[in-house]
Amino acid sequence: MFEGSSASGAERAYRRAVEKLTVLLVEAGALHAIRLKRKSKTSRKKKTAAAVYEYQADCDGEWGEIQFDFESGTAEIVRLADWDTTVTNIFAKRAIQFLLDCGADKLPKETLIAFER
Image (cartoon, rainbow, N blue to C red; front, side, top):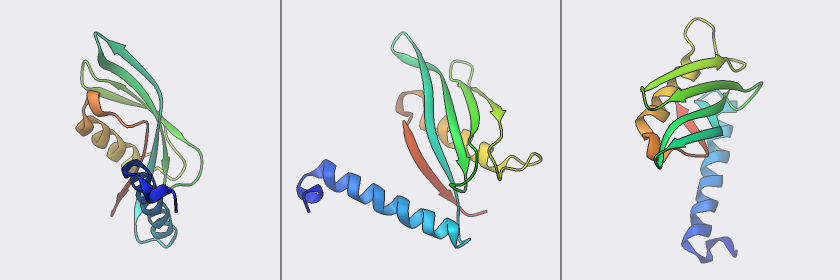
């Protein structure tokens, strides 16, 4: 009841509800999802130069790791997550594209990305 009393509380409640529904749709096989968590970030001259993210495929299993170098615009998959295939790396590639599209200034600490295959 108190969560909806402010704009930030309502936003948090909304994000939790969307995440819960996304996880239920993943469990039902209707969607795929990637959970991202920022592990570290390096800044130079007040801009993000590099970052390391952990990612989890379909909200289950061991976490993988991706390193980003925003100065050169490159990313490297350090370790694949469980359920990510060694041939296509579909989850890692989607995570890389999402974070590169965000830009170095607007990187999330944590997020959940849903997609259809």
